Length: 239
Image (cartoon, rainbow, N blue to C red; front, side):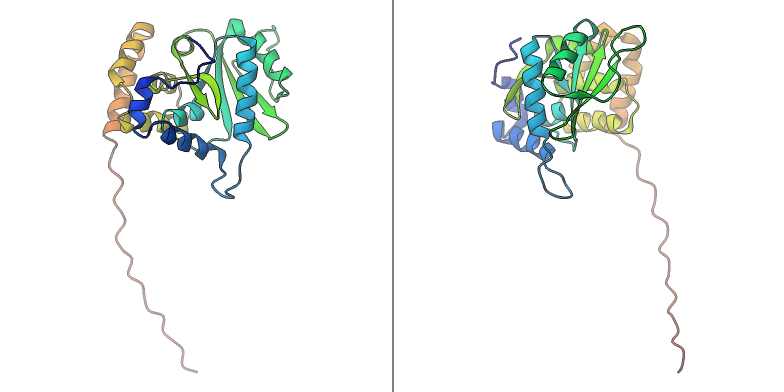
């Protein structure tokens, strides 16, 4: 894997249909506040964090909403999500600090082990960088197989949609359940490929995976609307 490459994987070009323009537009959506229309500073912080991660030369991957946008499924987000393995966490933490980011949550527990999630803040933009520290699969596979892609002009390994399905499978957060469903419904992901990967790493999760895929493809119907209420005309008082 070459994190310095700027070229998109051929399969990703084909899936987007619009090529580079479609991906750039999708990522640009992350940088604009939907209420004010102003730039959030996300791009500046992303470039800073990715330069730091490439410079420290530890394996990592971009995940979360930024990865979704790069893969053509933008969701509003105000942070960057990264994942590293626990053996590389200290190097990554130091690199992000040296880049000027400030840890707003503890980096290590009482025994000196890295925390499983560390939140950094860029004082220049107030944008967060969330560093997920993992000990095994599915994160190890995601990091090992992530393909180099351009993110806001900076090259970095980015999780595929199949990878993101596996990561979201282990979360019950509403936004992650929604992201899982969005990936399935988009038709962009190879659902069988993700299932095969899951079978190799955690076969006990296959039932949950298949259930969530089925629910995403055939969501329950919306509840019926209540009957229309007939308004009673207001009688005007005689003066």
